[in-house]
Image (cartoon, rainbow, N blue to C red; front, top):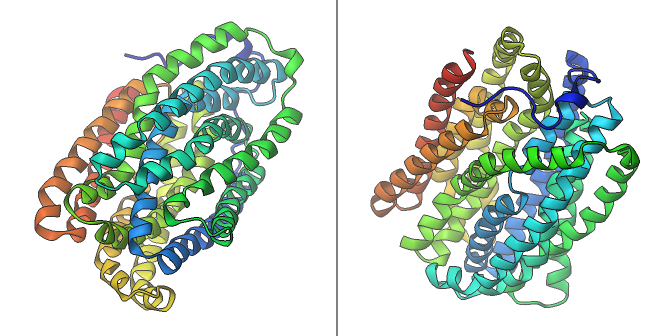
Length: 440
């Protein structure tokens, strides 16, 4: 059993407020800002996929998304789960400058070391990944993305600080800026006449510039000279990170299992076609992430106080509007998709992606009431159980894809992933009931 309290920062935490403001107006404003940010993400993400597919072809989109799968998985390893510990630590006493400074200073050195190590391994392993996927362009793409991987890991910590302080307007702006920079990076690659395998440079371009901006923001927010208990905080972050890093990697692996497994069975064109549906469905899933980002500081504060009934009441209230909102959004998205794709995509081969999109979006819409609280175990200091949850879900996802892809192709990949979403919701409820004694 894992303790629900803080470790290295207990003394500091007691001095400040228990958590961020939980008024509904503040939460609504935060959600609104992040939904607006999501609109920017959606436009940039859709634009990027259609630009790659239109200017470079479906095979280039397939290579790009296979690189992205490796990049995101390794980025979670580079962050080491420390970002969740940092978010939780800051959110428990956001108005105590000594507490916040100690937590931040204790987190950054191990993050830098881990980010450098994983980035080096990512670069050295590029040829092995390319051979496994039988796609030589993946190696070139991974090389171009390596500096971005290092910057992403640092940005993960800086964004966790902004999130933990409940600066959701700023958080939304920085998230939107990231995707605008990615789109700008692609236009730069295209204008310079680089080949399709080098498109993944967009991550280096975007994360490098975002790192500069976030460093200024956090540099102003944190009272660096007032940091205390830095070594204790460092130990706490590392301990939490060890227990949660695997779950973070598994979360991202779960998001790319379908694309990677398609790469094992089908060609780059088929992967590219499915990638369009999967990426647009991922954009829809970002609505869930918006809610998670806004719920996380509140849940961390409530969990630190042991306010179980308040958590249950909050989940119950949220479910009343999450269920109809996501059901309607999923239905509308599925109906609009077959009309939009032919208009945006030059290659008609992408029209075959509709069934996959409908399956993915439908499952997200049906399960959003539980997916939106997917970080509850992490915020309640149960990273080990969160790892158990994610390992189980990934296993189910792999099995589902392995059984369904050979028979149904890209629709089978979508169905396998939908089954995994359902497993996540069910297992989350069971583990939260067992470990926290809460019904969600």
